[in-house]
Image (cartoon, rainbow, N blue to C red; front, side, top):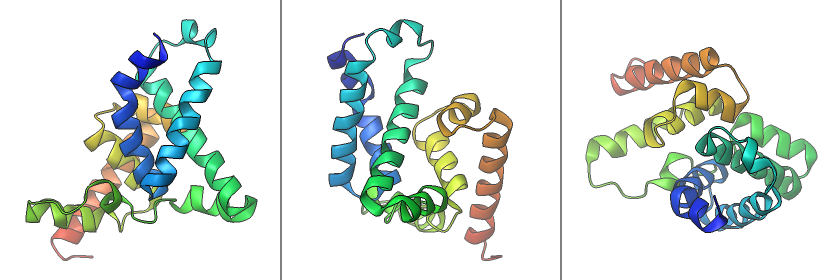
Length: 163
């Protein structure tokens, strides 16, 4: 698969994910460009990749984490990676939704812990399986599923006002 095909298939989704992860469209564009530069250097490795979608999200996540470490300094960058980098979270990706229930969901989702928020984003908006999410985030599929369940439960509680 050449870079043009790769971008055509995954570019928009990766950009949306990076905006979510970084909280900035401008930073997401920079990291997306760096991600595709890295893909260009992986010409031999592509033959070994079994699941290109999973691989591109993993590389984009790693590039986003590198960006945060560089931009914010080592200690602050690590805290942002673990504690949630997105300054805007879901709202940065989905602005001004027309549907009031979607607007409420996005506000509630921003209150989730970073790990749960990322898993919910990848599952609901990108359609990744728990196995794929686990691979992208560097955790087991069971951990990804557990984070998703806890995140959804917290969203239900918050929606019902039981917080």
